Image (cartoon, rainbow, N blue to C red):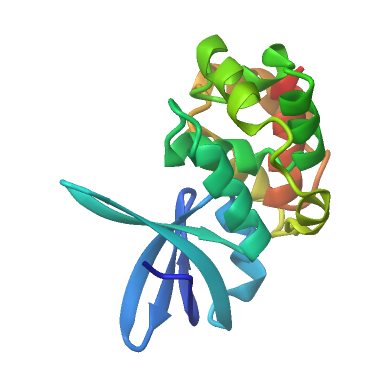
Length: 194
């Protein structure tokens, strides 16, 4: 297993980034790739978690160790895979997430893509009281790029599992409300959670 990789960020897509380490480009799936957009061609450290399956070896990446820890706790819940865990982390509302888990707020938890009522109940049962408040305070909250940010954010949300029809409904409301992909994603997730 890998703890982290340090290298040069060479590519950003709606679902992953490519980190070049000693001449090898690693595809790393991340919750919001656009948080790394101001770091293109720079040396950086990405914390990773590797998932090995019969048909794939996949890396999931995080800007901080605390974000990785949060992901590992979420993915430990029966019924939540890495893609759903990334979608939950992408909401960047970790205080709300923990409050929902601790208060068994099933309605809030089912608003994430891939989380139904049964899985939300399992999350509340498995994770209640297991979050360190200091860890949550330091989970990364960062910013990203410019006007094509709206379309980039919509692509990223669709890659996380949100339906195009859901995103179309909020696209006009979001236009001009932010100037970075990260800000658009936060805004969209707040609208989608209502």
